Image 1 (tube, rainbow, N blue to C red):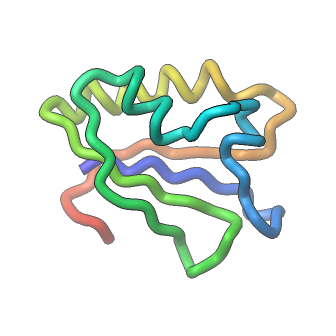
Image 2 (spheres, one colour; image 1 turned 120 degrees about the vertical axis):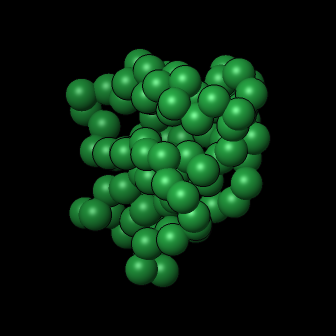
Length: 93
């Protein structure tokens, strides 16, 4: 399972699309641009609005994770306060 965790611990409610300058949904953007990626679920840490966790599956998790990182690095400007991690985990915890 691929875990994409967006966060800005200093904000009240995180708006990922606004932070990344997107007019479309981040989930749809990733699914459209990363081969073989399927959205599974969303979550957050600590029931707080300042972070969002997106869970994806893919046949080749390493390759898909690298593609996600590449896309997010291109989208993240130096002025953006949103941070992210992309990792491969064994479960939804």
